[in-house]
Structure formats: C-alpha cells, structure tokens
Image 1 (cartoon, rainbow, N blue to C red):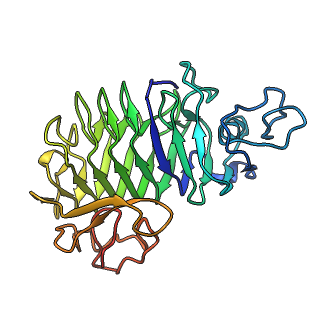
Image 2: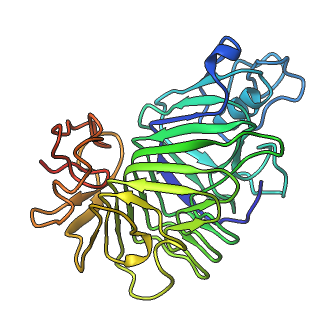
Image 3: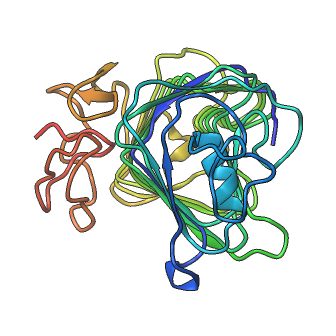
Length: 317
C-alpha cells in the first residue's frame, strides 16, 4: 500500500510472517534478478516469473507469488548485489508498485544483501490474516514516509487474528515520517521487541520511534537519539523491563533506565552482514538486558553471555 515514502534502505537477514508452516508445504522462491519487475500476470499459482517462459524472479515478484500461494512460503534472495526498488507507489495493496505488501505467511532469507527503496514508498507494509511473524537481525535505516511508520507499518487484515509480530536483535536508525511513528507504526496488531536499538528516528506528530495504537511490548532494548527537538520516542509507554532510554516516554517497568547519555558510537559495519550502532565502553546499556531472556547472539552474530547481556542489538562484551 502506498504511503508516499521517499527513500529507504536496509539489509535483511530474516523475516517470517503469518500462517503456520503446517498449513501447507512451503513453496520455495529463489530470487535471481536484482531488478524491480512485478510478477507475470499469466504465471501459474506458486510460480515466480517476470515474463512468460522466463526463469527470472525479482524480489517484488517473489513476494507477489508468495501472497498468492496458500501456506507459509520461503523466499531466498541470492547474494547477487544491490536490490533497488524503483517502481513508484500507485496506492494499491498488492505489491505491484511502491512498497512490498506482505499478505501471506512468508520467510525471507536475505543472506545479508542490501535492498534499497527509491520509489516514493517504504519497503514493507505487513498485513497478515491471522497476524504473527518475526523479524530478526535486521537493520532498517534512512526510511522516510509521509503518513506513518517510516520503516514499517503493522496491521492485520479484517477478520484476522492477533498473534504478535516479533522483532529481535535489530536496529532502526534515522527513519523518519512526517506523521507518527518514525520507525514503527503499530496499528491493529501487536509487536513484541527484544534486543532492539532505536537511534535517531524522527516523527512530526507523535512517537519519534514508535506510534503505539495497538499493544507494543519492548524489553532489553535501547532508545537514543541525536535529534534535539520533536516528539517523545514513544507515543505511549512500551517497556516491559530492562530497557535503556534517553527519554522517559517508553519506560514503564522494572529494570528500565532513564539516562542522559546512552554511550553509543557510529552507525557502521561493526561486523556481520548489517550495519549496527555500537556501544561504547561507558554505555549504560552494557549488561543492562534482562538476564533471564538474553538472546543467544546479537545482530552481528556475536555470542551474548548468558545472564549478563547488553540492552539493544549490539553486544559489546
């Protein structure tokens, strides 16, 4: 669905969404073309091709094919270089133009490739009948949207369920919207985030990082910004504990820390397939995560020590 976002770029490691794999055998869609071409309208069900008799499959075409293929499917993006989305949004919700509309259960294996959007729209509009899904070890940066949700807007299709979208060990950096929710707009489904870093996201009306309309639970995460004006990070409290923030708006639970300086360094490649925001030696986020729920590895794939992990996506020690 087009929301007239202007540009965004991210490196994708994994997105899983929607229906249980048991509902159908997973169809496999290998993406072997870096272009931005929609699905061939004459393609048979569960077949990805961009033209009759073609064997080429773009990321856009693969998502459209998965949307039309019942069951939880797998999209495998081949490491062929830079995938650039160039088709401007036209106000539809089927992924034909603009952002990539995810409407069925799918796992996207990004293999650390770089995907950018320069076509007046965001990358993802996630609306799954039945809700649910997972994003992990992923960076969303430099997303810009007019209405809401600079990087992602989350909602459930009418008649759908209420399983949460899980976001783990991921970074949202310098995403922006002219409305609400600079990084995330959570509309009619819930989101559960663990070990996520939100840095320098901005909005005009509310929720520089997160617009909270539906339930949002955040733990062992980090909110910080280099922006000196604008709305609070969260439009309503979201933390369920052990979250570090330079503003009070997100905090609400035991183990939370309100800090003046989050002690973060540059957004850059600090190892692994995605760029991250590093923790400096004096960061209050070090060892600030929930000792009972530490993830095994951070966003870069570095091991987290059990029982003494850092808040946010980056593990320093």
